[in-house]
Length: 70
View (tube, helix red, strand yellow):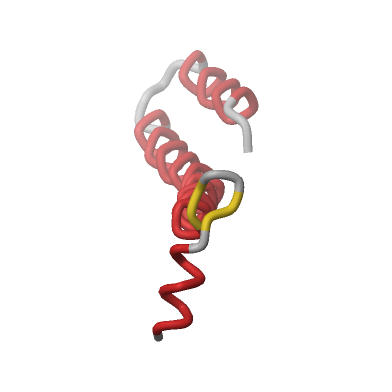
């Protein structure tokens, strides 16, 4: 355990290894969280839009699905 704490406190390029690990975890959280959030929002939006009768809403949903990145 002591060796792990020493590695975490080690500094590289003016930052600790702990800072790099936190940054990597935040990056991975955003990388995987955004597509999941997009899918959930678009799924709920589609279910709401299916209750309407006009085609504008369907076109809007398709445009949002294409425009918003992966």
